[in-house]
Length: 443
Length: 196
Image 1 (cartoon, rainbow over the protein chains, first blue to last red):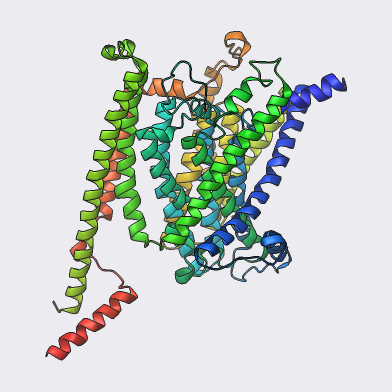
Image 2 (cartoon, rainbow over the protein chains, first blue to last red):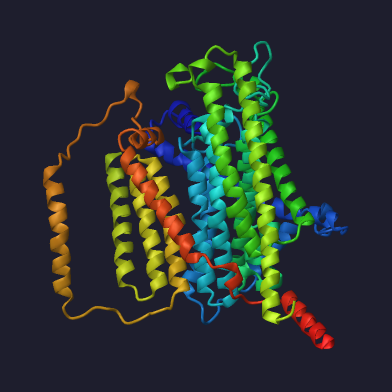
């Protein structure tokens, strides 16, 4: 964006503005576009979710406003805006107001490092991945503040549940990402996508076969296990159905949103759907190559890039369109999976949620980190790191050996942990029964 | 450009100091914790201004995302003791002592450091990454490996301690019965009575 603005102002109009002014204009423009994109994503996703879940439950869903009910979210938005904003008398006015803002702001920040297509990233930070997750943890503060400021038991309970859940599921999420970061050796999201070019066998090239953009990490044992763990953790962070206990309406009304109405409630709603979109997007980027897909690499090689300044501008547009199409298709597919899970599973209890996170997912992802280290050692290291014996192997051979070893390790870890976990759950049920028998004094 | 950075630095410092002042002067403990979070954010922004991106992000991840949550949890789960402002008439004495101690720590640093450092020049005009992830990682496993290991052991000890404190033998625990269990209880009682 900077280059385009710079070209337009300083070369076409010849105004000679300083670089900081151009940077400011470029980033403001990008930020404006993203601020417009985010609410539209939310509008579309709410409509999509309501229609999809209605189909699963043998209903029709919203179908009256516009063709196929497509304008239903707009009507909802108007309703939100015109509703009265009620602040409880006993609430802490300022914190009650700040809470929803602190929940929404981080989700908007997260767009800053999200690449949409080849060369289409607002800001390529070299620690983009870490930035994404660091910022997402800030919204917990907002949840806590709004739950406390409402001065309502249900709100406080909901906030406590939400924060406990977010903090515990951040660990498996970040550990599964750590495995991927080990494999790529970079924290930049753009680098991550570029490394997923090529064939299904990601770290070895076969001569004579063009770049299909299919070297996704999900095709390796390390990436697959990380993907499963990460997606479950993403469901918990986005408060999607099997983990939606913070707003379990049959137990605690609406959790931390109980005392909110009008547009403040709308902000929570916005934050939740934008966060879900972002979590699906980052899943698609990290494990499914983001905009990578057949054809994008070839198109982008013809386009104007910093390494290829005399390319054809048309190919920029084509590569961008195809890339964004692949990216959004993957993202919406994952959102569909989220809706699917919502249609299929019942809500977990809080102790089941905590047990699953701490006793199953975290050990599993820790084993996966070790697998990732083995993978890196076998595919990338050589004599310099003390692994002289792998130097003589062909790249495909190294890849195959790494694949088999990590696959066996991950499957063994999964079977062992699943067995231990199910035994612990059985034992727990038995002990619960014993407690009950002691309380009743009957056998 | 320099002037712009000076202005941003001034604003951020004002935010950090102002928020820190609010932390110690507001009466409500929760408000104090929220101001503390604002102060943490300001510090993270200052790190960004120093081009230490990694440290800035970790500051947000650790302090805003974890430690402040811990503080909020601790405040909410303990008894609320909101009282009067603890400003005695000898506040100037404590201010003097605090200023003196600060001076003792600050003056040697202020006088003993060369502040006019030359700009670091990287290869081919690229700005040098001051504290990138790689440099930090290499430092942790080579130069500062002992510190790193000691911190790791300390954290593990804290983790085990937390588990020991929170662990409750299951056969001895008391808990509130769920509705289904109450029902089950009643059924069993009735069954026991009918046997008698």
